[in-house]
Length: 184
Image (cartoon, rainbow, N blue to C red):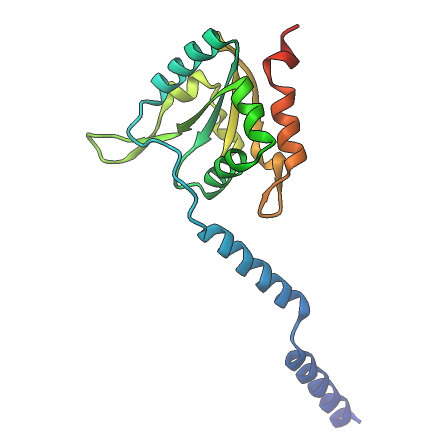
């Protein structure tokens, strides 16, 4: 009886192993798809040589002159989700005009190489102007008015869907923070 039971257990285990685990196959396919998306060569949008604090000041002055708000997308060229978001909004025919009509959109590199040490350091002056949004991860979008006041910090994970972004959520974000929605 014991031998029969042990043989049955071994046979069932062999059958399970030989059939494979559908969940692990699915996970493997999802991982492979994720890696393919990560490999996509998105355009680099962060200027590594720019002074982020000066970028912010210039954008604020321009926004004030044009009656717009500033959106600072904080991240870096090392961040695939940052590049994915930049590509997504610049290629969507509904989103792109909302941005162009209402915002001065800038890409702020959260880190800059220190010329003396050769190490990447957080751009503390720029991050302070943006309310230190790094706690939200990257990319993070910071909305400023024409005076440089931080109006909103958007954690981009709330705009994601799968391996991209949810169009309805992204459009809603931009529409909710354009000047006409805020200024009465």
